[in-house]
Image (cartoon, rainbow, N blue to C red):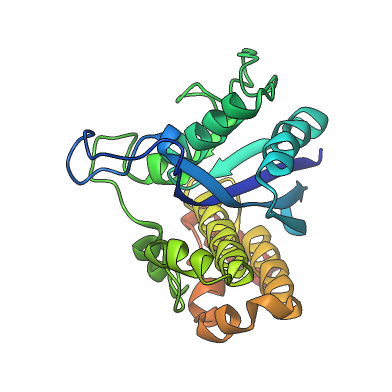
Length: 254
């Protein structure tokens, strides 16, 4: 059965209509109402018979359109939502902007059992950061650090701290490219997480890694990212005991 996974990432600037005065906890990001979305990015992965491949992406620079599309895509495809720190940032910001525009997020707030996007323990939303810190039991990792574990470079020149400056300079397309790089990086972490949990065997992971490699190579916006990835590290994974035994049995049978 084919499954679809929607990887979502937002890039934001502070909302001038609701000035941030620093009353929140020191060192924390301003709460969701203090943000406006500059780019709402989404990358769709399709998985069938243990094959995962990117089928397309979208970078919405119109905030209102992007927020409306977010719920429409979730509702139309009933996809699994995938984020990195999305429970604590991306989703609350999208919800705050929907509140601002009066856009209903029917799918997000449906609360259907087995597909509850807001339930921390429901697989309808996989927050990779949450998974990799045992849902808060350990320190929260940054995407940049996790990416480097698997051969991806993390940041390739632009970081979240540069977004406001780039927007002020009229360089929104560079922010969009940065968002797309993060989406592909999150897709890579998602595939490696699927391998970590045993949901992808070595052969399935190999096919998925190859598909993401080709997608990144073919996308002109991703040239800098492609050249910075250690693809050998990303492609190579260890066989489990069961997989190694099966391979040995196949060799002996020849």
